[in-house]
Image (cartoon, rainbow, N blue to C red):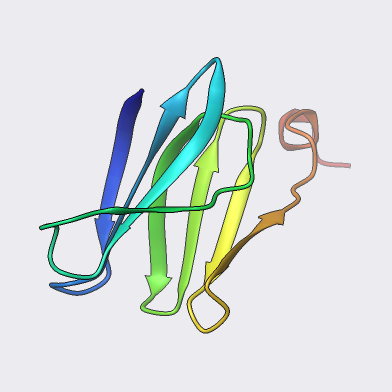
Length: 94
């Protein structure tokens, strides 16, 4: 198990993401400044590499295989966000 990225939305609430190439990606959450951490279901089998929040209520966890999870804290659920395939970003403008 490797933990790859940490992000705190305030002094008490923070998230860590990571995983292993052979097991489910993991998201950990703290609400007490890091004294203890709980598993927050990521619902992904892909290794997660980074976590970032655009505001205190909306966060993203990204991983291998173009896996992006979005969390809106009022719902307390990480959901899958789909992006176009990588090759579309590499094509010449039309």
